[in-house]
Length: 453
Image 1 (cartoon, one colour):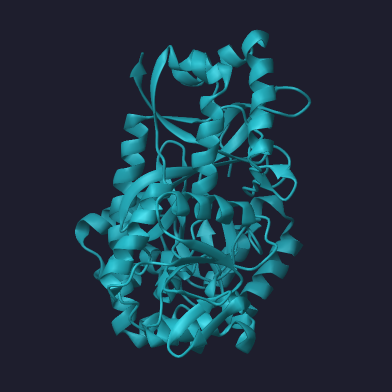
Image 2 (image 1 turned 45 degrees about the vertical axis):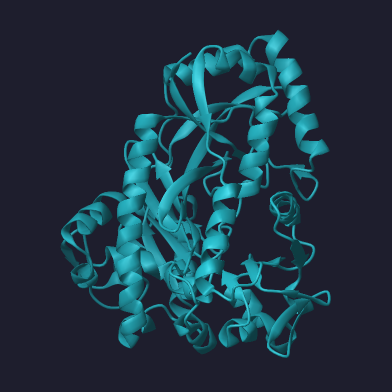
């Protein structure tokens, strides 16, 4: 649910917005903003990654609040993963495919199943984490490159004369955790990396940006489709070249759906022929059900007192969608499905294993008949139901018909590297369901505002 637009933006935001309204700053900034993205091909298909001409300007206090919450929730998720690995009955709650489960139980050869991950949140009065991207957190290269574009805008140069800013680059952190996992996996060889996902995706430009970044820092890197991989004589090959460090962007479910034609990556992983980051074990926590296992009172024993308090404060009520009794905020619920049917305006239905907003139904945006249809589908498949959270909206200058101000929903998503927060993905949208690929939807870089210059 969206909150009302802030009647008075914070002082630093108002200062930035005021600067961009000055035509001697705004119009040249708009021109360089477009040129910078198009010349560097920062696009989803043929659309610019960012339509918003203001970065996310976070105070240190708000950033530290988000980071503190992220650490606590990640700690709870780590405990949950350990429990899932040892408890088959608990693991059954995830509704995993048998082959997904087999891959998840295999030892990845390094400490963290997700060397890089992302907690997706809305930060209004309180930070509320709604999903955990444990498999393939995207957006890092776009964040870093957009920061370079913004640094050259006249409006940003003027703003830096008033405020001290600190960018939060993330690609270096991604490379560091990949190399750390590779050393732990340990063959003593030099890494030869392959970024692996399907050919022809609109996000392909990000793979190129990562490849160039890795190459500039001495790590030879290829980009390939999973179907191009070959496992020969115990070694994984791409384009005839042995590769031993896989930056896995392809999702497990999509990989397995292709069957034998894309089997080499999973076989290499099981054989210990390649270090695969993130591991296939990441699937355990990537499913939306992980938040139900955090939120549901029945599993409170898995977490310590500090983690339980953090879950109560920062994770919305979430349950696996199924018939039968449950609880909500300590109160008994006679039948969960009936309860969900009656409280449409407060709830969201989400597929347990999908991404990009696919299949998500926001109860307050649909009529009761459509909600009932979604409920029926959710029971036939694997869904969770989650309590709606307040979605903050802020005024942003947007490159539509010149420059116009729009109140956009703000999605604040801290990246975690080996469990430690570092950098943030900020997504903006004019729609109720965060969509960065249409209208005013955008990714913008995130800066810490460290005080006046």
